[in-house]
Image (tube, rainbow, N blue to C red):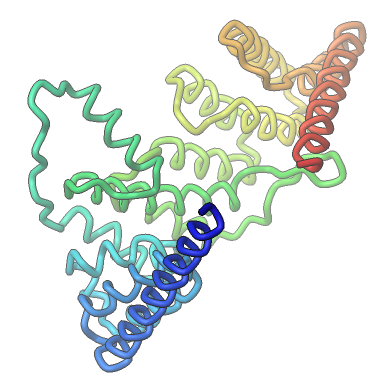
Length: 321
């Protein structure tokens, strides 16, 4: 009996798979004959995504956009189709127009469930964003697009502005004035998520390259006081570590040291785990306090060793599965 049931399920699965393949092939034929029809393209892309053919869906979407004028972005169906695959390159014209069109586009009003307050509504919206699937309401779809534009722009700003580790030393990305000018223009063009943090990173990067160290510390203090989302402890450590290599002004060193000590205390009180201690050791060395420099160096080394041990255990645990 069990054997018969298994055979039946296998046959049903094969039939479903065959049916889906036939449907996909018919949609492909329809698409090949109507490549400029947004409804046809959308239907084919959705079918490709359901069939887990993401790369093909991306190719079809980009191919469609390459044939259309940028004004086509103002069509809502086109706009939502482009969100996943085309609003990825901040240096493209369509990305800029995506920011512009979102402000201009008319979105249907949302039907708010009875008794739902603002906090519950926001929680529902972000829950749907986290799942990667739009809700039925257009406000959900609008936030999904807003999230994609904001995330991709922020990712490029991080790439151009955040120091990275090279041979255990923080290094600034090469300063590309044209790219940074473009990114600054885009940040100021629309109303994006995390906009203030993106502006701050661009301003800090510019000041750091110009040698305006006082402005760098001042901007970081303002961001920390405002609890600015996106300005993490690791970012502050990386920026100030680079800055500390060129500081000669004693007053600025003392101001930076006081700021870092406050950040460490606040983050530890909140349960954070950023390693401020290597930076503190550097700063104490600069003010001539060898005892504190050695003390914080040992604490920083111990924290790093513990972190590496946790990563090793995690790697071994996941690697054995």
